Image (cartoon, rainbow, N blue to C red; front, side, top):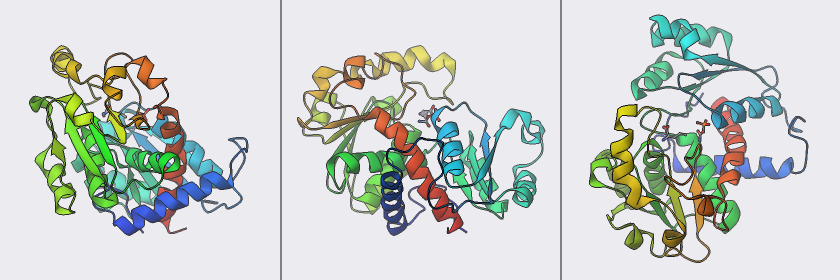
Length: 308
Ligand code: CP
Ligand code: NVA
């Protein structure tokens, strides 16, 4: 049994195998209606719980569809409606759910909640986003880059904006997949040191550059994310917008990247804040491939977790 909690706590070999498997599964069902089952039904007879303590469109739908394509069944649970939201401990919830289901995916606030769930569950647990990381997203992003441009190893990836949870998983991925990551954003929203240290420990130190135009120069991939994440207080919105405005990804900034650079955003986006619609809908953008690849990447993650 494998938990999929983070990119840096999963071996590089296993991460690579999952990306390759995701690609193979995507190709195997190309052109089929979304509702048709895969030829392989590795989740037949398996039940998957999808727990959401925060909103979601992509994670919710892609996990649900992915499980069904592989022959399994899902139940989608809102944290608020569970006893979890009314004082039952995470540990007890994990023990109880493990008696009913074969796999648990949880989107939550604190990383400690995810860790406690994994510690006490006797079935695999998948991280569907916490305040600190979003590993499933970056699996889809690596898959998407490679689908368009070949191996990501050695490429220059530039993150513009907030040093947030999605950035953290990019920093982990830089170490595990061997790409060069640069961060450009205001000092007040710098990423946590420990994320940068991980990439550096694997021989891929993250560059920090305050000037977005310098940072993006020669980039193979430019990435951004919302300026206000789900765990950020609404009261911080105006301050964050003011600090992050110079880091908007617009056509001028994209023009500094390599001519064949890709643009990614995990979505949901606030169009014309962190990225302009001209970029999001422009020739560099692969944002909807990224969204689609959540489905394929997570199917590979679930198979790895269950060993099927
Ligand atoms: N990118 C992502 O995780 O989207 P959702 O919040 O819609 O799941
Ligand atoms: N950083 C964003 C990602 C959403 C998928 C958030 O945590 O809200």
